[in-house]
Length: 474
Image 1 (cartoon, rainbow, N blue to C red):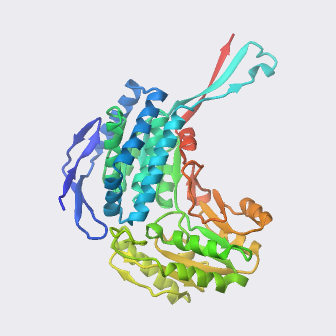
Image 2 (image 1 turned 60 degrees about the horizontal axis):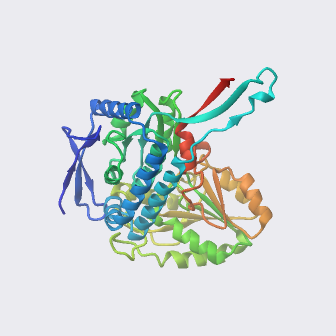
């Protein structure tokens, strides 16, 4: 396998650095590329380039629309290579890589359409005495330079969710991808520039979050930060950003409630499918399953019958359902959390098995609320099944979390479904589907320690623009 060298991309030019770090194939361990490690001056230069591009070269909404739509078309044309790159760089199965690419393409299309719809509203100033000769309205204007930091688990899709709305809104970007999976961002860059994006609109700086992330936070020319990642880092960004706005998509330990009247076949199938996709490394992956006591045994049997069908192994095999975690270190952590829970009284319904970065699906019962696998974000193919007696108890247990991104509930009772929507303290409540459901057109974001702001092109554009009031004295 040939090893590429990838430099920083600043102001439309490739910039070499003194140090480079390796990006590995997550299953074989082979080196895919050597990627430049940015220094502080590189970050300063990247922000300068983005600032100059924003001041000098304004694309019209229709031009933005055409560029974003063309990018989606190019992604369709390069589908095979993009999917395979995700399999290698992230360790995604072919199935998961296809799903991520499908969603990224759709997000570019949605963002393209939204670029043409950015508008304000009329203000009824003349309804107030003394303002009879005033005409008032609002407009939305781009913020300027957006600082974007993306995670490892969905590098193509989550890069798209930051880049496409930012460009649609008329902003420029400095983006720092995760060091373990930076290649997807460089693929997006190439496609966007091939589609006609001018130089300087996107600038890529790579390196550790501890260094590059801090240098980005130091630069007050960045008008807004958008980040997906851990709660700890999200809180730090919020503290450091001052008065500048932030959009933070953080962690979760998603609860899913299986009520006594649920369609158990549907519930078992969907929870099994979405507990372990992307090796459980998704912030809305099924983690806690609360099951009514009366259907506990039946559901568990149906659920396990689905889980044991999952094939674990090489992500390049089209039949594989669960591939490796992002690193052996993370797989070891997941194994330690599971063994710790077992030592504290939990039981596993499946053998606990790890092969380097491969961690096989683990299904735990007899857990306690204070166990890490229950109260923290496990971010691994680990699920707990917990019984409850009545729906109020299920709501209470689901809400016993510092997180609040998305929750799922299966029930045929409309009243319970509506009550769940009002009672569950989550940014999204998914009824008769799992917490993992996300359509990229919808507003996506959490409450509590799951973050601030919304993603989804229309809603992200609102975050990435300022509302400005205009008053005319006629």
